[in-house]
Every structure is written in structure tokens, then in C-alpha cells.
Amino acid sequence: MHIERGNPQDGDAPARPRIGRRALLSAGAVLAAGAGAATATAFGRDPAAPPAAPAAAVPHHGARQSGLAYRQLPATRLLALDLPADASRDTLRGLLAGIDKVLAAASAGALADPRLSGTAPVSSLAAVGTALAARLKLDLPAELADLPAFPGDRLDPARSGGDLILQVSAEQPWTVGVLTEHLLTAARSAGAAVRWSQAGFLPPVPDGETPRNLFGFKDGTANPDAADPGLWHADGTILVYRRIRMDTAAFTALPTGGQELAMGRRLTTGAPLTGTAERDDPDIYAKHPDGSYIIPATSHVRLSSPRLDGGARMLRRGYSYDDGPDDRGLLFCAFMRDPALFTRVQNRLAEKDALTPFLTHNGSAVAWVLPGSRPDRPLGATL
Ligand code: HEM
Image (tube, rainbow, N blue to C red; front, side, top):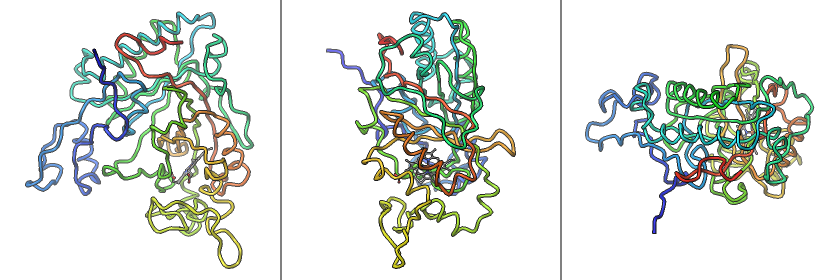
């Protein structure tokens, strides 16, 4: 019997090359690490330490798409495509099959492009937007639906929606850019046009540490495991994307104590205000002797707590973006069974969150993240 070795879940993800924490802080070392060309000495590693593991490729095929089955790679691009108004299911399947071919070749290091040599790993996601799902009457979970308007939304249609949303991630923006070029060639040959495109990044962090967002707080601590069955419809799930501009100068000018009360966590350690370590569970019901909550009623961690949603969780895999000095923020990308969860949380945040005065939501999309592909069953074959 042939057993296909699909992509493993997060725990089995190829390790980053082993790089010392001190070396990671140097931008030069980070660039060199991605190129895979530097020597151990250039990283400042102990010469007696075991040799660095080479950057492993991420297999493209598997039950779930590689962009969710693996750890977050630090450079990303989201690409929203529109299909011609008269596109059929066959057009969509053909387009997805073309994209699948490019992605499978890229992850196997088999795209004939010298610019991609030695740039593994890459990971990717393809998701069908709500509008196209409705237009083609695709048989998808009933939970797939647009979001309502939220108080304070400043959504730009040119940064929102899209028939198809692709996400490509790699260690370096270089790789993401070249791969995007190949994907666009495939997409355009099937009649698709770019609706919007958005680059994002994570700061360099030592293995296993939570990256910080542009407010300086660790972001992603309280995430469920990517394999949590509560996130999935079989091997598909739903992406909620929001482009959120952050007034970083105003927020980071607040005294540290004020920032921590707004977030409900400590700035340096990421620990909840009711604990001492990052992974301590926030106790949103703990009170001071005067009866006020230790994690304040208007704090982000309290208002987004799963305890207020019967324990339902979303998997947040956000990225920062920087489109110039006055347009920096968070690409909020969260995966869940039902976007109604996002709606409940965002309604609470929009009304009360102490972060809200520093945020502007200006892009939005909801899309069906397809199950992964196999060599004999390209992305979208089951649509
Ligand atoms: C720019 C805007 C945002 C920033 C800077 C931000 C930042 C953070 C930070 C620092 C944490 C605590 C660490 C962690 O557990 O990851 C957190 C937790 C969380 N955030 Fe946000 N967030 C933003 C927007 C949102 C939005 C729009 C939602 C959903 C509507 C959301 C939902 C959550 C959830 C569900 C948690 C985990 C709560 C828990 O389980 O304790 N966040 N966020």
C-alpha cells in the first residue's frame, strides 16, 4: 500500500537553523542565516557546538495546507485576486491547479529559477473569498459568511475582499517576491487580476519565543494548537483577515504601566497581570481588594478572552506591516471554524478595548482555506 507522507503539524516543523540569541540580534547575521551561506563563526556560535542544521524544505502536499501546518515563516505576502465576472467552477479549479503546481515545485526546490536556489523553506495558503463562494454557489460550510460592519471601521474596498486569497511565506522577502511573480504569471494566464497585495513580516526571534508586534508586546502567546479540532471543518478552515493601522508612536509614548493595563499583560515578559510567566493562564476574574479587576475591564486580554465565548478559540497568525512611517500596523490573520467568533470578540473590542483609540481597521476579508493538496488531487479539486 502506498502511504503518502504529507506535511506534519507544527511540532514536526523543520527547525530553524540553530542560531545563537546574540547573533540573531544582529541584522547582518539574520540576512546571512536566510541565505544559508554564512559560517558558524559568522553567527558567533560556540565553535564546539554541533553544526547548524540546513534549512529544511516544507513539503507542499498534505491533508492541510503548509501555511497552517507549519510554524510561521517570518516574511509573508498576501495576494488577493479577482476572477472574471463570468468565471465558472472550471475556471476556478483550473486556476487553483495552476497555482498548486507552482507551489509544489517551489517547495520541492524544483522551480527553474536561479533566484530561488537555496531559499527553502516556503509555505503557502490558498483561500476562496466569500463573494466568489456565493457567486459560484460552492458547497462550503454554512459558517463562511461576510463580517458585519463594526463601529469605527474605515474599510478601504481596494484593500478588502477578493475572490481568491493567497499567502506565501518564507525566511526572506526575496523568496516571497520571486514566488509571487511565478504565482501571478499562473493566475493571470487563467484570467485573474490582482485586487490587493500586502507584505508583512515578523521580527527575528530565537526558536520557540513569541514574536512581538509593533506595540512591543509578545503576540500569539495564548494561541490554541494548530491541530486543535475546534478550528477545522475536516481539513479546511476559515480565514478572517483585518489590516489594522496602529498608532505606534502614541501608544509606546504611554508609561509602561499604562500600556500594560491596556493590554492586560506585562510588556517585557508577556505574563498576564495575574501571573508571573508568559504562559500563565490569565485569570480574568481575579480582583484587587477594592473590587476592581486585576486584568482591567477595558484591557485587550480580558475582552478577547475565550472565557467570554464559552471557550471558543481562534488561531492568530498575524504579521506586522510597514507601508511607510504613517502606515504601520498588524495584519491580523486568524483561523476559526466560524467567523461569528471574530464578530463577537471584535464587537467587544470596538466598544471598550483600551487599544481601540490607537487602531484603525482599514482592510478586511473572509475566505475559505482549502484543504491541502496531493499529487493526484490539486488544490480546489474537491470544490
Ligand atoms: C492591532 C491590533 C491588535 C493588537 C496589537 C493585539 C495584540 C494582542 C496581544 C499582545 C495579545 C496578548 C498575547 C497573546 O495571547 O497573543 C492578544 C491576545 C488576543 N487577541 Fe489581540 N491584538 C489586536 C487585535 C485583535 C483583534 C482584532 C482580535 C479579534 C477580534 C484579537 C483577538 C485576540 C485574542 C482572541 C487574544 C487571546 C486572548 C486569550 O486567549 O487570552 N486581537 N492580542
